[in-house]
Image: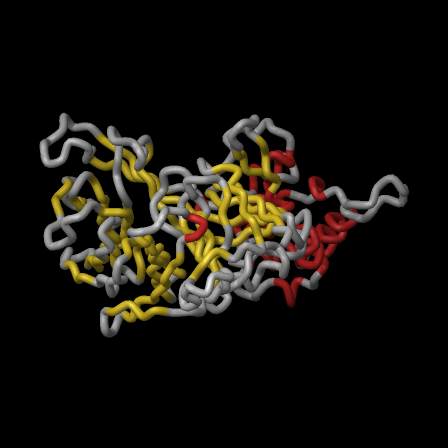
Length: 435
């Protein structure tokens, strides 16, 4: 679902002026009958003609008849064209529904925070939502701004039209602001999950990773995995009770992701397990050890094409500095069940870290981004660091120290990334670093 470079208005003008025979298939009787009425169409178009007055340069799209609006709404495919259409006026908002495929899906589940003891019938809420990368189009060169997060409908229908085409964001130290998505390039990053009201960084409400997979889409059956305390817990919708998953790591779970219909869990000691959602059988996928070093491991899916393992290497005898840490990146070979070390990601960008208390990591292609915007292919970006400043990671960076290995991924200090906000939406500012 690539972002549209042309405005929605330009698309609709072309469609409204095309002959009925080339615009609508013969099988769609309702559409054909409307467009074949020349008097109806000419009257509709006449209302959209540009005013002869020099004061007006745009047509009034709010004058389109309801019948024609319904035809247009049935042909719109891009979810953000729906949102743009809803920003025109109140009548358009009543005809163009907020696209359901970008809404958040919630599941009411039995509480897990007293496991293995049985609770008193309490419930918790799992939320699954689509994630997007927003690039502000103000400039194609640095400095540039990016936002990572989900969106939702504005419940107030009395707000001015431009606000209907905006997402609300909160930057620390400032009042909530509105980001007009009509001014943004938008790239989908897949889906993420979170437990509503649970903070992974709190001892009282901690969990480490949560994911959901369908078991039978026709019957609406699903299975949920969550890392809690020293266990991985599983819940099937047919039983609605938590059970402990055996045959996994003895260490605490770090995160859980889904890839090609399976769960993958990573643990704080570096263990990785593949988990079958139907049988709950586990398969160890531990990467090779790195002598004399510890590591933080991250799993990053790239759609259904690849699953990457990013290992942040920690030299035990050295002083910990996040901006100086090296990384090793591997891709999963499913046939042999092994991790294969890679030095090139092609046009892909791995985004490591989550907005707010969500679970998982994301990725995208840099092909759709302009050169010089601060995000390029074959790179990694940690977007939720402890400190508010970081740099993109690239392979083979020369640090100037002859003792540093070039066959790893390191910070490329050509571009500085300032993390302006981490929750509920990640906000990033990228700028050149003076040599």
